[in-house]
Image (cartoon, rainbow, N blue to C red; front, top):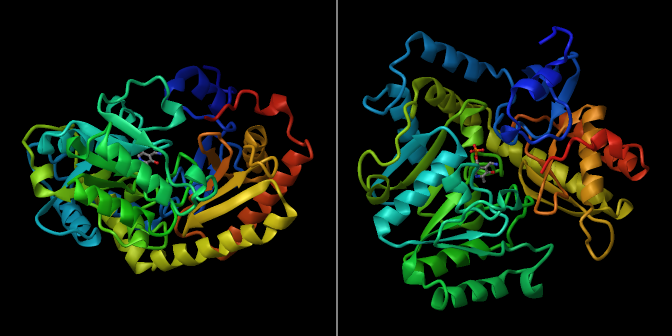
Length: 440
Ligand code: PMP
């Protein structure tokens, strides 16, 4: 490869497209706080936080120190046939942070995908029930097993688990049968459990407490609590996938706390490692210990990633990041709502804390502004901010910035987003410019 080819071009010629979502040509040489630095030394405000993974931003001293010291005294490489202090301390901490009752255990993995896949297998093995319930639009991962229990359009064509039943996600902006409170949907689910998807055959219901990749949709107040009650009647386990929206991001330690219910099983990932690959499942011992040698990978619970996760949890407490996420998030949501009347393409603004969705529509009939959304995201990159879009119609701007985002940075981000929307509407982003950036 010639040395004057850009990093982005070299990536295209050497790295597989299978692992890519392309929104604009972003090649990074560094990161600093809430900014990423591209290979021409441009600083871009990262309002995605690497899809929520960069929970503390980039180069946070707590993560650097914890990883450094774990490497210096590296206790083996995993917990597969041994154990190490960071992994055990992490498991102990997660049992404190995530509420639950009875004997529980923690499984450690690398990604949201492997964690959800493990849960899907373990609940079936432990209960002897073969069916799984999940929501249309749910994204639980990118591996065969996790996709098999998902309902996102990006996964069309993937063989679904034989026992998978999908039901609509409660979406107050586009309500099921016109009922924004979700009660009609609960009746629909109950009917399913009494007919084609018998409740006593269902092992678990996989729930995103905010549906993230499906469109950053916040369920109506009280819905998940009622759903959990319904599941309890049939002894269906509730699995809360907090991979993108958990751990302080929603202005509470766990997103399900908004709903005042305690799921049976909780899945964490992304922001847990602050940029390093680690995920966790917290659940009842009888499920997490259903057998041995059931879900093994060589590097599970490696001390370097576990130390990074401990540093993230410490920092959330020490820097008061739950409150900061709540306050900065409220501020952003209020700001976007306040400009909505002057910018009708902003159909809906929703979120909790620093998990925010801005849905773009073309008219009062709420026709998704898919093409425009693509251009807004591209234009924002040109103007110096990074964020992506989500949703089954690819028309929702998703903001999941580092929890450490400041008020000034929030203002700067808002300014870029609003200007990008104006520019895209004015036709300042050509079709050719975005042609190869098909996102998802
Ligand atoms: N669950 C949720 C809710 C997610 O948003 C994602 C990724 N977008 C995953 C699971 C999969 O996580 P990973 O990409 O780390 O495998």
